[in-house]
Length: 367
Image 1 (cartoon, rainbow, N blue to C red):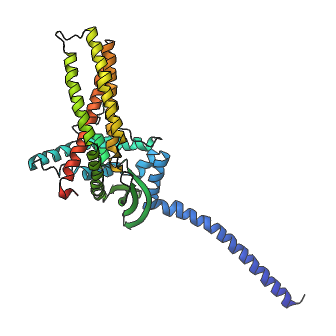
Image 2 (tube, one colour):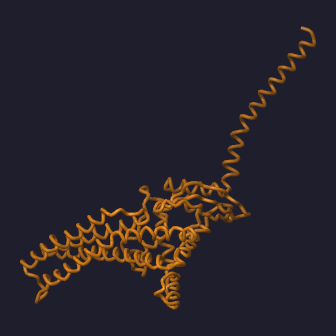
Image 3 (cartoon, one colour):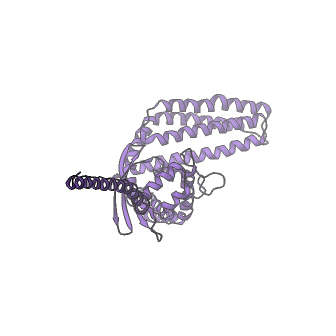
């Protein structure tokens, strides 16, 4: 082999070895680069924080959820956005009364914020994907705090707002504005919320509040109010008719229960039980059956569900009452009274919705 041929082969072999080394370097560089981007750069971005929050909810990981959400600030700001206009459109209230209510809402804010944080953490932890409302002796149950907390949560749109996708994220130093597309399942309204994130002293990004939350509420409320107004109008004749019937039954019930010494006779108990079964409970079931036939707009589904719950509670109350008087059972009477309180709370919640809807619908500035 002459020198020229040998040198050509040597150059070819060297080029092949260089290409092999280059290929090996590239193969190593891709995973190393991805590792560096994913675990060194990406973990220090707002996008990573939002991703962690969504995964924490999916995986029921409360610890991670708290790590990437400033719950104290987020819930506090949300509460202010939610309650600022609670009485803004009620022309029946004078300015002094409105200020009194505003002061009241500020006063109860710590308890509501603390309770809401607990509910959010329980929601993340629960595998059934449902909110657990206050129970037992919790100060937020019913109207113990002077407000209907469950109605407040419903107005927050917390249960009906669902994540769609993450949009643009704009950083400004140690803060960022993340656009998040959501949909309200009650009205099928798509909207872009702006999550404000900040870096803490450990350079960890956290969601601190939603900057346009109030605008979101202002957009949805007229839509839902319109559906509620339509549904109420469609069911008004049914409600009025059965209210008149039940009012008449209430008068007869009191007459049947009337005694001289506070003790009903055996025959009297039997008559009362028979009347409640055949008249009161029958009327409640008939009213609900008629209400169920009315087509309900999506934005009024919550009100429709509350009416159903109210009917169920009322029937349960009367059933336990009947068992109590038929068997002379104090325990059954006690149970009936507890259920009656729950039914009253439910009716108050329904009335709050109807009143708020009527007030805001009647005020041009509300829409």
